[in-house]
Length: 114
Image (cartoon, rainbow, N blue to C red; front, side, top):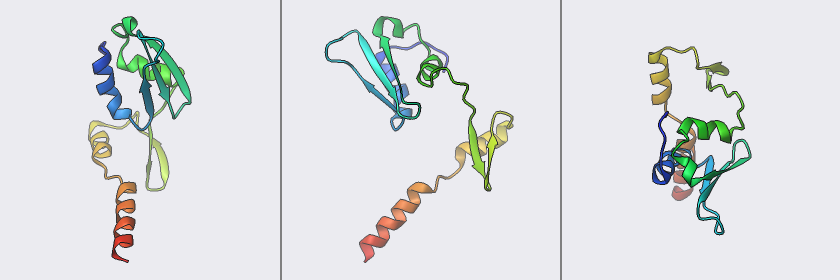
């Protein structure tokens, strides 16, 4: 996450954040891109010539307006900071099954069966 990138690499990187970050190019400016963060309601404009000097991490920092962001998760009813977790616990978090999509799928199945 610390290396510089070109525009196609940026698009590939942003694919992970497609629900949170919008990418577009202004029609009247061919040498710049616009990124909009839905989470932070922040918009940044990046000159394509400068893109090769910016890292992925710097882009994410710009989009959250430099705010100090702590990653947290909800575990058994309470929120916990994950900064102090060991590798095993972080791997468990990464592998954790997200239920919201399955609930929607189950609801859709019930509608189909009715």
